[in-house]
Image (cartoon, rainbow, N blue to C red; front, top):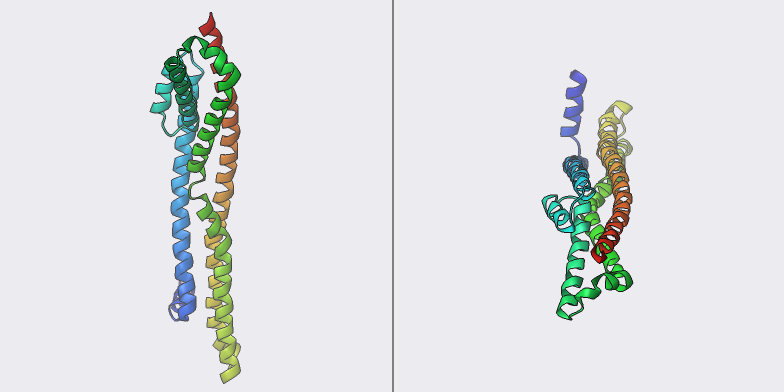
Length: 234
């Protein structure tokens, strides 16, 4: 306990620059942990809604019923993609109807509209990724910058300690507190960086997995549309 109090006393009596570095690193750590908890909750919500929507999508439901399910699961990445594709289908159908070519709907989709559907699904993927990637760059910044900020505090503290030796003499006992406070800056920098970097890597891995699942869903969506067009012609 006494050693702990000594460390606290050392930090409280440290230089302004080192104290500023420590405060900055502590704020960065609090900021990164806030993002970590937010993103963890967000990913869990998205993955849960993806599972729920996929069950409805793979059931014996009409396109309109699946669209309603997509609106109910508004955080689902698959739901975002489906809404984009369904709305594009509806626009194509409406445009053909206005031009008197509603009977050519199936042929138009297979020959021309399939490309617009693919672009719509890609827009859905991009929109979903904007949500998934949100704030991850901030975690990466904390993870990459914090060690260097801590190192700056360490270097500054050691320079001050050895400057005191050069100007006034003294022993190692005289500079030990300064070196201690300097090394604490490095430790705090690592304490801020390690969780942020680890969480960033975990979240990036989950983003990659979700993107693979979205690619698979895009293929399922196109298969569903083709089956729907076949049944429409019967």
